[in-house]
Length: 117
Ligand SMILES: *[C@@H]1O[C@H](CO)[C@@H](O)[C@H](O)[C@H]1NC(C)=O
Ligand SMILES: *[C@@H]1O[C@H](CO)[C@@H](O)[C@H](O)[C@H]1NC(C)=O
Ligand SMILES: *[C@@H]1O[C@H](CO)[C@@H](O)[C@H](O)[C@H]1NC(C)=O
Ligand SMILES: *[C@@H]1O[C@H](CO)[C@@H](O)[C@H](O)[C@H]1NC(C)=O
Image 1 (spheres, rainbow, N blue to C red):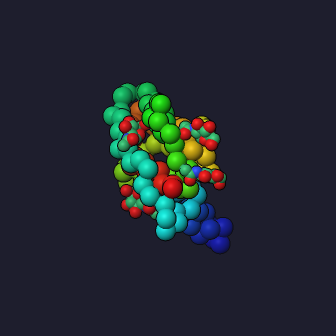
Image 2: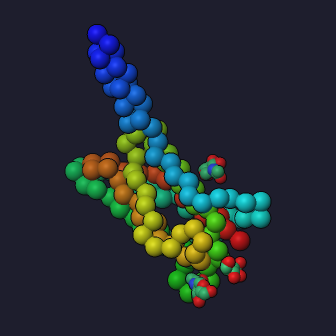
């Protein structure tokens, strides 16, 4: 009986995790850090496809400032949003490449904010 209750708790806990948004926050945003770039990254879903998008900071030919924090907000609240990872640069660098990837058959909608000074 005890193990059954335990299993039920595990299952409900798992369900909670699955239904959450995939938010990410890397680094530390200090009082002197300013918003360097905010991008609304949106891709619609296509049957059986995985959608990806690479966001590059800074724009080509521009100087990048020192990045102190990256804040990625998943606007899907049903757990079907995408995933984010850093391909290059990031915290402590003056450039970054952020890789966004949807789950198969889903799209994504992220707010990506880069802070630094
Ligand atoms: C922010 O980054 C995105 C993606 O690289 C770019 O399209 C946009 O122009 C940038 N905005 C500014 C204000 O630099
Ligand atoms: C980053 O900093 C290095 C050294 O300070 C500089 O050479 C480079 O041009 C900078 N890159 C960007 C994208 O600003
Ligand atoms: C970026 O960080 C480096 C090392 O901490 C520093 O030397 C440089 O002045 C910083 N650049 C800017 C634009 O703040
Ligand atoms: C992250 O970005 C979201 C969307 O813009 C914003 O609501 C939230 O306050 C930000 N979080 C931090 C710690 O800056």
